[in-house]
Length: 349
Image 1: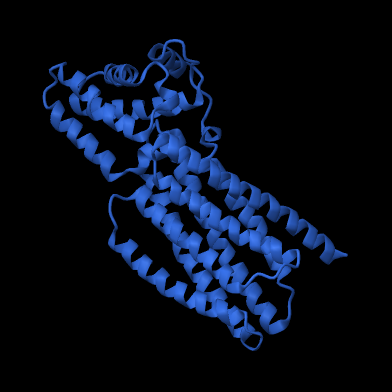
Image 2: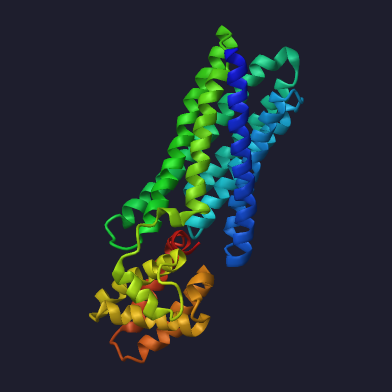
């Protein structure tokens, strides 16, 4: 009876995970199209490949035979889509570390596929399972550790900023989702070895893994689909500023909050360097956004549009104020945003 409840519970959780992954994949394609943030397509493919892997687990639970080579291919799919998403979204070029990770993952992918084929051969199934598990777990461990490093590095970089609340929380959750992935590795490895050598039922370990995967999916849902849930209540001062900046717009718009967050951050950065009032700089940026994109800019502004206004209309408006050295300062700000492409992504996307 316990086994029946175990299978029913695990199957239900897997179906929930599958549904959330497919929803996120479709949603991110829609968002990539609307915002022209093309790196989101890689993230969408990551969720689709992950859904395919867990769809295979559901199929096996239903008694449908799936070749292990296909399972290995889906795992490599989500490994490489995440690898390329992280480098495209958080860095400006293919770093030396990325190139080493890519080569390492390619070598392990070859090992994974070879042992996946062995798993489909009855007499070699045991060695195939052990080799396949080691290859996959090492890949996930290495990739997830890099994800933790990225999330925590950027979180600590902006941790002391009064603004960028949503971005900081998204960075933190990115690191936490990587930590959840790392936690899966020892459970999977220990469960596999105990199942192979001592005959322990792996399903008990799989149940823990499935719960961790559900947590992983929920964290990513908050990061990429519902980031407004990470925002605090909108302060009265911000409501007033937002209402003045966008006549007729609802002052408590959650997307507006995120736009005003990056406006406040950039206004503070520029005002410190030019020795002017932060409110004046922020006001010029808001006016530039509204003039270029309309009074409802906060609902539709994309990352590229924001950068275009910052370096175009806003730059011209600030120069008209005859502020000494403003061109060099705006150049520095633009370079900083180019060096850290994830900041606008974590704020506006």
